[in-house]
Each structure stands twice: as C-alpha cells, then as structure tokens.
Length: 130
Image (cartoon, rainbow, N blue to C red):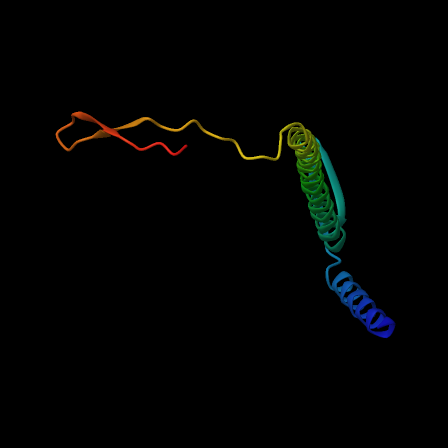
C-alpha cells in the first residue's frame, strides 16, 4: 500500500514539474485597479487552484459545523424526551402502586335508551343481575 501511495505522489509530482516547464510565459495578474503582478503562468494557475482548494476546504468545514450543531440539537431533544419518558414511567409505577388490583365494578343498568330509525328515543328495560 505504501508503494502505491509513493507511486501516485511521484506521478503527480512529475505531472506538476512538466506542467511548470511548459508554462513559463510571463502573465500580468491584476489584483486591484492599480495593483498588478507579473508571474509565470504556471504560478498563476497553481495560485488559482490553491485558492479554489482553500475555498472548498472552508466550505466543507462550514457544512460540517452546521451538521454538528444540528446533531447536538437532536441529541439534546432526545435527552429531554428520555427524561420525560422516565418521569412518566415513574408516575405510572406510582399510580399502579396506589390503585387496587381488583377490577372496577360498575353499577347495574336499570334501563337502556335506543334510538329508532325515525330519530325517536325508546327506553328498553333490562334485567338486573343481583
């Protein structure tokens, strides 16, 4: 693996050297209205690539920072919801301990009301079990 890395670095360096040897013409770089700079074309191109790489790096750092902040917000919300769940589970356990285990008994019904198809309410007696 190390040999492959060295081979890639060597090939990239060779391409850069050949590019520099072929592009030695002098160019004028105008930085501001009254500021001009004379440099070989290869230097100007490498500087432009460097500025582009720097901007890409800064953009990547910015987006990673945004993702980190979003993850922190999400983690905080999860912690708050976990705390709320634990509090509710504690309340439920306390409620279960306070309430009797026997089922609730409803009083027997004496009559029932039924609605007929024409909208009238009809009372139907039901039998009560004692």
